[in-house]
Amino acid sequence: EDQVTQSPEALRLQEGESSSLNCSYTVSGLRGLFWYRQDPGKGPEFLFTLYSAGEEKEKERLKATLTKKESFLHITAPKPEDSATYLCAVRYHNAGNMLTFGGGTRLMVKP
Amino acid sequence: DAMVIQNPRYQVTQFGKPVTLSCSQTLNHNVMYWYQQKSSQAPKLLFHYYDKDFNNEADTPDNFQSRRPNTSFCFLDIRSPGLGDAAMYLCATAGVGYNEQFFGPGTRLTVL
Image 1 (cartoon, rainbow over the protein chains, first blue to last red):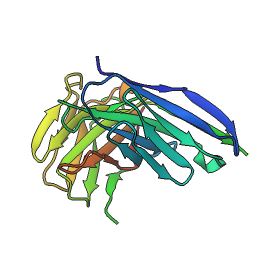
Image 2: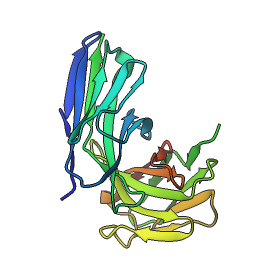
Image 3: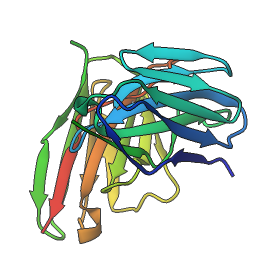
Image 4: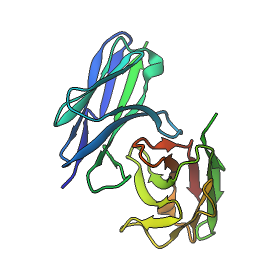
């Protein structure tokens, strides 16, 4: 069964304390892995798309990487405004335009 | 700026009273999606349109219907809302050949 699992479910960091969020997937025929940021009461905001193992994308304090089984979202020196839920989603072969979402990681960065 | 717009942002309805949520997009995307998201859960796909071609998820209740009168607009109709339908409803779009889905701000539905 195609699955997407994110860990940890929740993460509390001090401002400046770097860490990584994990997204593991067991889909066959990956067509893309997507990271979104979601603030409370708002829709998900697109961050990155990764297509193949070894690919990396960066945006400000965020860096996303991809292997054949998982993706990491690295947060370097986070600030309180990075607090949000980070969602991972995959598109796989035979799924058309459908995305399969993970459960998300709720990140809280304390000043 | 090109964007996905949802109205209203907050909707309160009574148990069993029909409600319609609206989504519009200026991205000229072919695909439009409706998701339901409950607290601390991932978005759950209800249905999507590829142009005018409607695709219903197998576990979407019959209580939920959708209309797409043109490329720009899509509506979600909940015929008889129950307490369990209280959630955030998200609209998203995607262009042909593009993988990314772009989400609107959502409509928070409360059922009294």
